Length: 117
Length: 454
Image 1 (tube, rainbow over the protein chains, first blue to last red):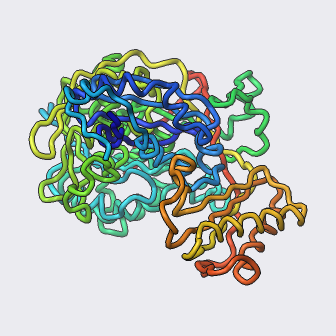
Image 2: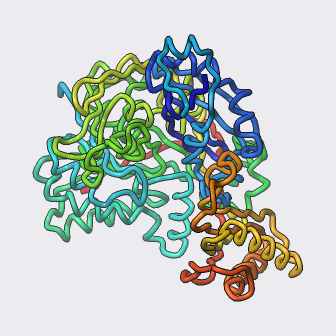
């Protein structure tokens, strides 16, 4: 079943120099394991292909049902150097939430995941 | 000892809501008002102001904030801690003293001033003694930009603020204190936490991190259930109610808008997060993977379980340097085929800049309304967009080239693609870029000092 990340998680992003961070938080605690399994560094790097120039680093925060991603080379130099509208990386959060996940039907039913419309 | 110490956040950055400090002091009982004014590049702006006038170089908004709360803090003894001093905390304190006198509170407000974070006068000496101050992101030594440095300040921790409080200061003004130290200091002062009580110190840091961006933990910029967050016009800024054992609650004054919930606090916890296992501060290394949150009622979140480790022997240094010039111009194209028109204007403009022989380090085009925020992730627009803003920016070392670029936008209104508007702002402004250079220095090189004046 296709599931939109935006329907099972919320997020906030910010900046440190030329790196954007995106914290992704499961909307329900029982959805965290699925999100942690699907949102690998590789998957997120592929998602942001052509948007960032550096690599992706992931950290897990099971205590908050959250993952933290560092997206390097995301902000055209960052801070005051950047010419981007989003020089501070404020909306990389929603950019990541555009992702769609393929979840086995049985698992999706067991977790009561909302299907992508 | 107080059972509970209440620290209210009144400013999350220089430019935050002017109403917030007064609302925090008048909206209910609080012990401390915490005002955070400094972002990464703020110090360099203040340094430029100080060069023009040696009595400047601090966040002037702070005086307005103090004026708005002065009668209440004098009457009720609320203490104020602010890093509004910027690159001139002494001048900030003097201005504050004059303000208090002018408002009939002369001599009634003891002001603590924390100095010692400013490394600019010692920069060459430090470099000569082998402190490379390599850029933490790129590894380049500071010598590559030394002649363009505008300001250099060490991020300092809570210890000198605690000293100012213990010497009776009611208002403490600092330079480049860390944002979190402003909340940590009153907790250390009130509860007598030892400088090696790592878990409690880490709790103080986490409390500081949650409230340092003001309403960003209490419903502001909150994505989850954003339509249902009540009364943002009247948003309540956060308050930490801390106990001596290092547990605390995040709440806000009754009758205010916004929302404090486990998800709203979690969004703020992950904001600007690096490695959550090691949130490094001058006081302690906090482990964000140990934080536990639970709802403690409506608009109350309890925070507990936080662990910390000894701090490192380094301090981070915030260095600002001149890094060329930039300018950004915009035009708006309307339906039909708005995006096509904006794309043609972009090609025309690039060809003209090329023919003029103008060279830039970077030229960036964005199509606002189509792809400016999410780039290729936004996909192809659905249907014919009602309008698109062309946003065109250049950056380079040659000021004249950037200046020349700013004169190429307006002509497009008459000699480019049709149905264009939105140029009333006039020619784009050339801006000097002041960039940020993060580095490390040995802690032993930075000695802070505290003075208390009345």
